[in-house]
Length: 333
Image (cartoon, rainbow, N blue to C red; front, top):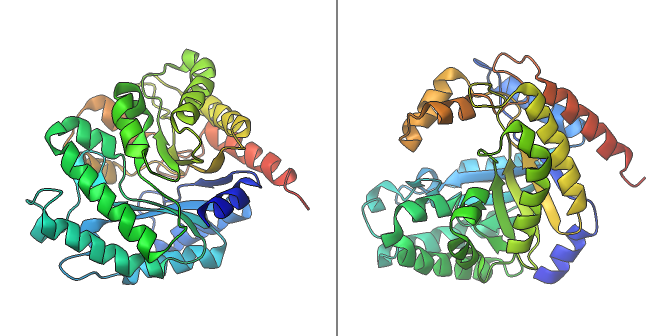
């Protein structure tokens, strides 16, 4: 059943989306407006996620989880879902479990119980499930927890397969992790149906992008083996303080579409991150969450948007509009 589903998805061009958000001070109405605009422009993919800790405080609360999935289905988006057990450099275990080992029997039992309740509630527009977000970053920083993670990963995959046979499963890894520890990345993908990636070529200078982006996509495709690809996040900052520019970000948009076209027979979906710059206050919140105060990381977080935080378009927004128009023009009638 899994093979049939993946082949059906690969029969058409890759799904594509842009992570939606709002301007500084914007609210729910603006978010709805922006989401609908993206759908009108031809976006048909949206990654969705929850922290394990936010939907399980001892007893699973899946109301928001269900509402978000029903909303995306109603608008016409396909979804790749991520349960953020590990999340970049953080553990997101429920509060009463946060000090326990990843392979503690109670941790494994709770995760198995949560999955058994949430997976049957997935709407039929959900085509893949990731059991952790950028887990390689956390594991590289905490090598003593690697073996415990793989016990948890095994339990999670088995629980998903039991709850919904045929649902493709993966775990999200970073391109950076693929470069720094390819053996760990390969082990994380072992036994998985799909390869989830986030891609931010942070070490690439603007002059290098034309060569780097095609090479990086080829490397991710090669590392995935025969697995289909899901690019959960793809982005590049515009900050000159970061060593980038608006022109470089716009070029990155074009290079991304070109790379997706080249690997279209392998790619299920890709989501560009981000529509609008995070507000200064949200940037500070994120820096606190990740426990980082690095100036370069702050510039990275602050300038990922196709538009500035006040809604002013960057050059990359114009390129994105043009590429989406071309994508729509090539849709089968």
